Length: 53
Image (cartoon, rainbow, N blue to C red; front, side):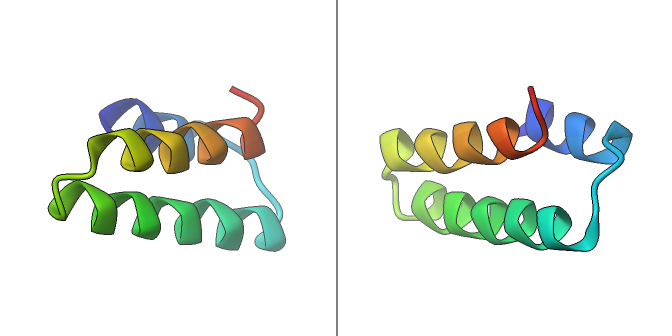
């Protein structure tokens, strides 16, 4: 999650991509809080792909 937030802070994204990354981050955090780390990591990886990372 730290890597995702660092990449998000440095990324130059359009509004649609920002919204998508934010949505995926939120879903990942929800899964993390539910102790479903595998699915959380999947959401974070998807968000990184949106940012080209």
